[in-house]
Image 1 (cartoon, rainbow, N blue to C red):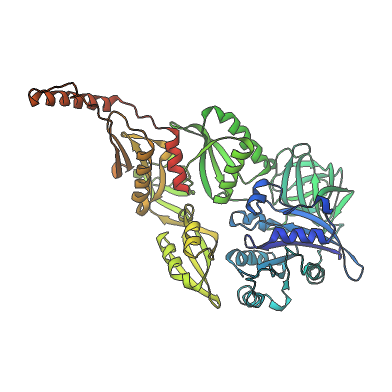
Image 2 (image 1 turned 90 degrees about the horizontal axis):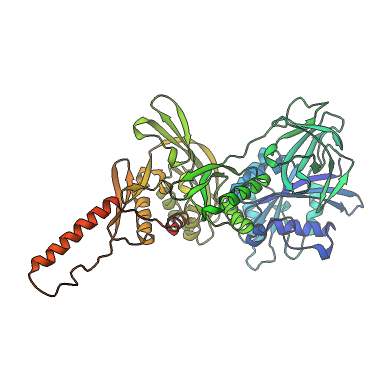
Length: 598
């Protein structure tokens, strides 16, 4: 066990985690040169195209140190984006050490600090790595100062590397063996194994990624999931070495895969503890947390005939992604669809793109919302994330919404605009912390619903791309949320209803009305498009009618003949307005919702 090292790579998004993992795999001979490709551990096309890690991956590498001793290195590559921080947390629970990667040109960023705290919570030994030293803008000395000031790590132990060119990789491997601790555990104790990840294989079912904390697991053992309460028989186990490498057993301290006939990721819970049915552990591994969905949105097929295809597509995605939740939903205008829960906006974006790309389904997605807690006057509390289920305002006693603690790292000259941006998004408190020369951390408490739409994009704009943003959910606080309905020709359009703070209701309603007025074709009668709270109209635009020239056939005569015909036309239009139907084309919904979510 003393020759095993379990470690993960954590960093801010786009600081070179996947590239560093590639170089480590090559240096240890984990892949033949002809089989190598960039971002080796990223399996999805979207990950490779966008250069982000969405799903954590693991690989077992053999490494021979300078003294001739062989080591087993279990490397876990983790996502960098805030939406997938629960995956980072589970990966950290499976390790004893972590490589804290910092970009030599950009320095310490918000997610770096957030991941540092996650690692310290799990008592990990940290080894700082300064990456991208080959860049012309690299400033290693400045980054060492930031590592000392912002992270509190020894700046002189930080290993400078270039993951792109391979410089410093041998020093890093030596540092991993010398600085990071070996795992602890008793191979003879009752089995305790942490399930930190899983993916679906169409031939073998769910393949579990596990770290054995205590005990020994062998093939044909009957295992029990302690939180889910399900039993399975182990069919195969072994190491992940790009291809699955079967072994006879996994002992304490080792990381590997388990195939046990699990049919869907939904049948088990990631973060669960595995033990033996005939010799169970006394208690599960502490620190288990369920993934919490924070953003909710309705998904409808562009063409109603594709509803069955959408159902099958979501089923297939959910087999692999336990964090995606969905239930049936329907709309008078868009037909049948699904109300889905996501971990954040990037998660929503990835699922939407996978549905369109892998299953070729055109989608209409409603504006994302968060979950509000509504206390009714009879004392009952309900959770509402869909405007359709918003209770009558007369029955509501109070409403609370989720708040976050947002951490924004920015160069000093952009502090004013950043604080103004936070105030515009209903920030309740702001504190500043000067980390190092020219860099400031702004901590702000604000509603989660306010950062859903355009906050991150605006932050990048006002800081010219240098600002970085991370957040953690804190609590629920009382607020003044209202339901705004959109009326077209005095008829409500349920799909376009939304929940918003009263102060922002009019501006958003005006935006919806203007977009609809542009997208709905003109009719023979005047069409009002209105935003309404209860019985109060807060915004309105009008779609002007076509006007038929009823006086064209007149060739002169008294003016009363002209007035008579115009009066007759006016009565006809008034009658048509009472009984006329307004056809709202599908593109109108797409125009409103897409523009809003952008």
